[in-house]
Image 1 (cartoon, rainbow, N blue to C red):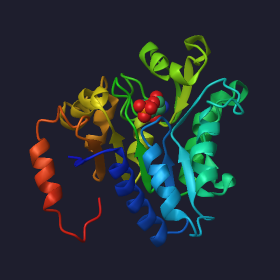
Image 2: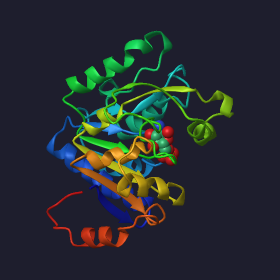
Image 3: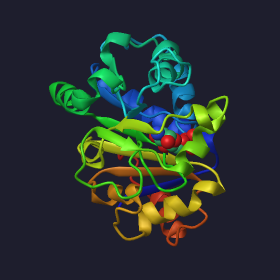
Image 4: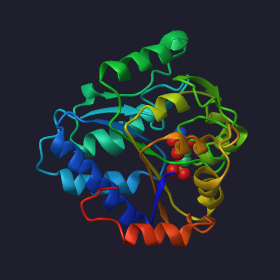
Length: 259
Ligand code: GLP
């Protein structure tokens, strides 16, 4: 099962995950990070900003999970823009080493295969940061996604469009399609770190960690991964049946073990 770490707040989660990433980069300067968008990973990027300051991160590589289809990459809410603004610029990464799926309509037929090739050529993702949608989606793998899926075009659910409408002037501006790493792609990363905060995510977290493996809850795919860490605040942990056991396990974890 995934290791569940219940922390006090999002800031503590950010510090914990950032520490793991710093250690990864220390051991492997050209580490491949799997980058996620959404509000959830922001405390990680914030903590990384402080911890990576002054270090050489010029070799670090990164792959974003997903992108909207047909949205101008220059649009402030394209995931290309978000990753540039929230991650690449503040952390001083080399933009040429940071990849985002290409959502351009003209090349969309082979954009998924191209992205898979690029991930393979980089030797795979070392640490994949994940958020989770209220309906249990990870990346943009909406309910029903195959556990074996690779990077491809998906249709966003109305729920996801509504959730993400806050970033746009109106819901009509939220694209209907996206290109996302598949669940099978995500499962190939060497370490998955899923974060979730707030009561609104509690059900999705409980279903992903403790529920049955099911395409209806794409996040449950993390149960198939040999090294998955779920970092949640108390509110997001509130529906976990084994919360006390997770607390006990973490409190008694050997100090030499990272997350
Ligand atoms: C979007 C992203 C997901 C993210 C989800 C949750 O749909 N494609 O990667 O996990 O939103 O977003 P938030 O972290 O803002 O709750």
